[in-house]
Image (cartoon, rainbow, N blue to C red):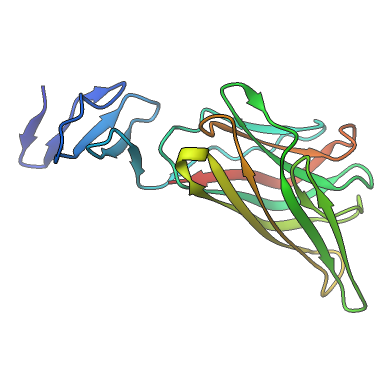
Length: 208
């Protein structure tokens, strides 16, 4: 049972909130690893409280990098890059998924490469597109995902990146995607699906 001590309030973990009561909300602790604090409104909608930062992924050589086990109830997710490159000239993609797997269609996305001389834009329906096509680049920055409509599982995305190789060159983009279910995973991959990632620093996610 829950208890109050002279150092804090101890709440026993649970897999889900208790039954809903009209006019009442709930504060509870979910039994994930590590445990997370949640608020559930009287309509049964869960909201995760506080930020979680996952373990940094430094794997090199794979055609994709996945982050799974993202809990229900988040509304904001950041994918952070530190000195990341690809093995070839294929543009990069951020894809979203739910319990049915990663979804690779239905995105509205444009990625733009900005240089001192010209700007170039490319659209994609297969994922949120980062328009980097040079294996010599070391890209740093972030994708920001926000839950626009919880009832339709619609997420909007924007990104802002720079390269340490070409002075003054940057990458920006934006888009939206409605999932078939609740977001629980994200994947970094490439348009051609065969170029691999060279992670000189790391890729990580944080969410709330």
